[in-house]
Amino acid sequence: FRAILVKSLEPKILMTVKFPLLQIPLINFFASSTRISRHRRFIFMASQSYFDSPSAATTDYPVPLSPPLPALSKDIEPNRALTASSKSALFSLSRSHVIFEDEWIIAVNKPQGIYCESVLSSLPDLLNDTGANVSELHLANRLDRDTSGVMLITKLHKVAAKFVKAFTDHKVRKTYLAYCVGLAPKWEKITVKSGHGRSKYGAWRVYAASDAGRKLPGGSLVKDMETSFEVLSVNGLGCFKEVSDFHKDEDVVIVQEKSVIGCDLKKDEILVRASPRSGRTHQIRLHCQYLGIPIRGDVRYEGVYEWKGSRYDSHELHAESLSFEHPITGKPMLLQAPLPSWAIQPLRSQFE
Image (tube, rainbow, N blue to C red; front, side, top):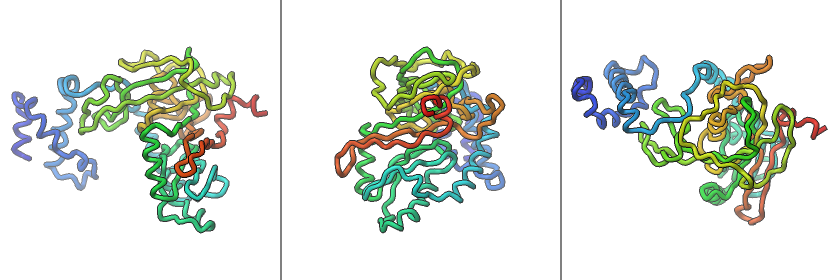
């Protein structure tokens, strides 16, 4: 390593030593400082300087179109994770969380601020009373830590395999509700198509749709990402609609450049329904950011942390529904979770 590093720092050879540096496994360098040797620190610094060089960034890799993580998120997110870990350790499912159950599947309403794994690990205690086999429990879908709503769990391996295929083939439809703060959109329905991938700093970012399939630092590829949106309410004015066909009378945005809408235009409160066709990490949150309507409390993607005198300790995104064909009976299923209070509030007149 020492010989390679000496050569890599010579100006004339720097840009010719690309592949040896890329092959160094960087994941080991995020351990505590007391465990990283002096040589490993040097390797990490050299590889970082390579990734940060302008010619490498512009020539070899696609450029992300969404901004890097705000400084605020780096302070807040670790505290949120610690709080969620404490809550999750004490969490237990009750019958009030159950949305649907039969001998093959069970759907629950996951609370905000609880990890999926904690929901799964607490399920055997709930099912033991029914005599169900708890050794084959499997998460059919996953939700972010602060996302509430429908979480589906299969009870048998063969059922889990059927759902993996159903999700892969886009035969499971998902809808979410998101409370956003930004500039009220001029569209009522829209579909956003873009690329999705990790930037050189490890954060999920939006890429151009035409970048799908291109290689990113670390070896991963940009993947396609598609989400349909529908406005339900702006500043408390609107109407709650039943889950409908998003692909009627909609605008389509194929992302090829940076958004022209700034997230600093925090004027309006917008309740939207989102339906992701692909299942990428943080997909809805990223597309809301790109549209200039980041989710309230989502500091990772420029959502407001303090708004109208209140502080928001989690993002307001709710997995509203899952619809699919039952893998065993073949019957059409629509599973819906109860609405959270923040989703009811802008539509309160309809529920009173």
